[in-house]
Length: 319
Image (cartoon, rainbow, N blue to C red; front, side):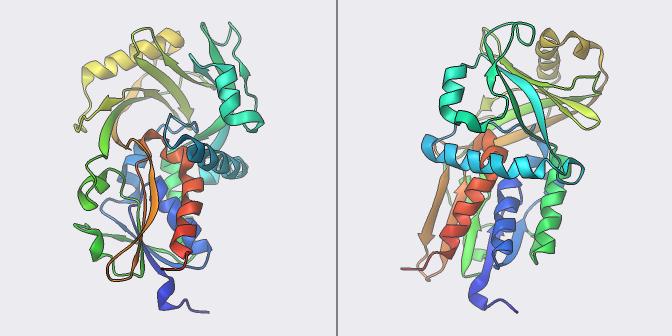
């Protein structure tokens, strides 16, 4: 049966948040078009690590609910890792407190325990978490959307009012700074080094005494090393000195990294905001605008929980 005109939705943005939201909407019977400036494989999400963990986003209570719902979905997707790009992988969160992690996640996080001295040189938490291979996961989301009847259109949007549908969902990430406009959205620059994997099967996230971040994530056919979190930095050009420092910090955790061959350098601009904006707005012409942006580096972590809430907001009666 064909959808009614009022079932039409335009989702602006095709990162992991936009595509996941579009999938949820389409599978609930909405007629969905995704508008994206960049191909799916060239969005900021394509550069992400991408380990499931909350990354201190706010509001805390809602972020916890969104993240735990997303964890539930990823655990199911991990049954088909070759197709979905999602695997459950063990690793250590350095400088993390078990009591704090347990209070946040409770018994929902598999394998959550204090790391042993052999696993990590300082205080840390060991867990088995979803690790998402974005070059596989984003195309899988795209195909799932197309199977549900959705469409993806590459086009540049200068104003959200251009979207010709009764419901518009704004998943533009950093683009919301100009499109809304919302100057509280800011970039947090992340640089990564992609290497041949010298045999590392677990992930690690660590912060040294100076506050410098180091992490490595084993992905199929490669090892991703990071990272940086430069507030307000807009450059998408990799910095060789930063790359050398990333490799040095990661090799301090796993010495075999020092001899691995570098494959490429990546830069992504995380769309940060003091709080995630997930809310409904009624436009002057009676149309509905749902905002779903400002997730910073936690887009993967909360994608499914936020998508389901955005879909509920899109379906709520006007008035």
